[in-house]
Image: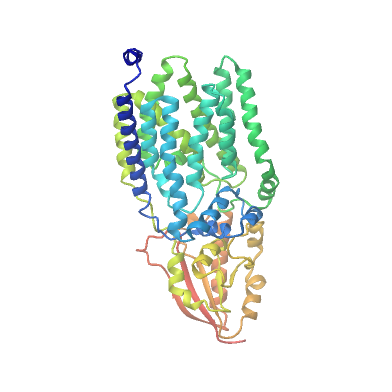
Length: 519
């Protein structure tokens, strides 16, 4: 009798519920397995510049890492986690990439929960599929950087925001505050995400019957995050004054579209999702006021305001890189997953096309030839020899492959600690560097018979080297190579230029000079 009464109320049988849970678990495991397969095909790829920096910073004692980051410009959470991870699993490419992979795999059930709990089962499964296949996440699941963690946190923060402020589930107010705090301690673009969340809060308050309560809860959440982040503010202020991204150009208006296209992995995916999700969004909007509509408006506002605030800030000071846009992936995937089912057949076609685009993607394993350079010329870097790197930020990754005990120098001078790039006022220092000022003292004191390995970037496309920093790197590289090549005290014994057939985005060329005279 009890069972029949429950069934009349729509409660499924225990056996049916168990079967449904088992089926759902099987699908989730399959999606995670697909994610793991596609995101381990480049798991052993050699490091590029930023990955060498990550390992170098994380290799410092745990308590010293926050202080070391005064030289870099990043928050500490990822490096602290990486330090613990390396203690347990080692410092190889595969071992350190595995931490990013773990965050990417967690993004699949996180997306399932976010979509399902906010907009229903279909949205949850679509969000999970997107989380398993998205190529942007595939790239950074196999890179020793913080971006897969940022994406995971952006999914959780977006969902917690909607639960807390749109659906008025107040238990999520501290959850949003916690996850947003973790974002702030992971990447500085979380500040723009916070600006977007405040704009979204205004939208929610305007739609709410109790706007004062919305603002009150918002004050609790943002205030709590501000208090938790306050200990880092002095370091952030120092970083803002002395570091930055001088290698970045101010983004053009086209990059307001190019950025989302990049994280959605191509114009085809962007167009398919934009058209189908747009149709679904219009249909939801036309049904009239609802919590679902308010949630979608808030999440869309969050994404657009995050993008726009980052773009505007980057007009004032260099702060733009497409990889930083990972903070947008959480809200964008949730919007697409929620709107596609409401678009009917067009949504199904778009979903199929995007999944086909994404499932065939494979991450690039040719990000740098630093490992190959070290393999070819490691025997030339004996004790007393100097590895002279004209692109200073390449030093940590080269030190990883040549060995941290080797002697390094750059146009900025001798490198005090080759595990980290000291970005403090580096643009001014590089601008003032001359061969007579920083190169000649090094050449003069080098004993006869010792060698210099001159490692400089291979510039194949000068249009990619137009930012303040990169243009100076190109100029200094040419000056240093000319100075060494014309110095009668040195004889060039070897050189290496990567062939054009070698697909390496950040290629380095090498010249070995031996001091044969004392002139």
